[in-house]
Image (cartoon, rainbow, N blue to C red; front, side, top):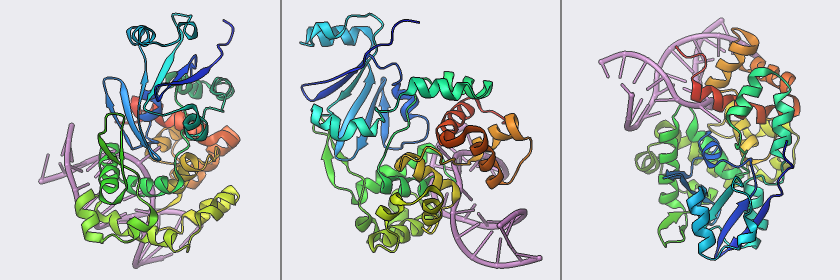
Length: 321
DNA sequence: GTCCAGGCCAGAC
DNA sequence: GTCTGGCCTGGA
């Protein structure tokens, strides 16, 4: 093995560059179903998060050479195979330290994680190898609640469209580096005030519209306190989340995994059911038992393992006719 | 036209 | 507590 590369992060003209990080592949990060506020165009992912709109791209050789020509410090890039990810419009190093570092889970050692999970079994190893560069984002808690209520019995294309329309409907305006208009994710108060039929018509969420409004109201009036939930043990937090309208066991686990860094939260969806049955169980139909098996096999990182299994299974259509 | 998409809810047992 | 049927919507 070569000596491990030292990751460097720097900001030049409001663009942030992450240099020498092998475990950062925008496609695997954004197209694995954990995030809904992105659009891909020629390898660049336009992403809305918090108050930011950024372009995430793993640069190719020509782009790196162009960057150097444009005034990039040449000494930063001294290996031909050194990966470079650009977060266009992401801001200064202060923005990185206060937001992006957390959002992209930069303090987790993914090389060590891949090694640890790969040792568990061959199928998990195949999934890990397939999705090298996948990271579990740390997204906004309330945004995850609303997004995953919309996700139930739905597909990713339509979920993305509905979340975008909802943000447009009642989120605050923000702008990207080229002054294009985008929208922040709405507050609980903003969604709580919406009319059910307006919401359904404008966003296409259909029968989920009353769930969204009820849940936003429960959160806005502190009937369910999100700050409290984040202090609770996993089981209690999961139970509390399912009090929200439209939140069942699977959605609650997605919220905890992607919005509250709960590595053991193990969402059991159709693909995970297929994978767990094909490789570990056979014909188990009870989701609670499937989840218990996941926790038994993958321990306190079951949720992380789940995300690689899910992504691999969905792409390869494991268990489908 | 029918089927399906990262499930949840209500009602029945 | 566990199981079953119904469900907005739009693209294949």
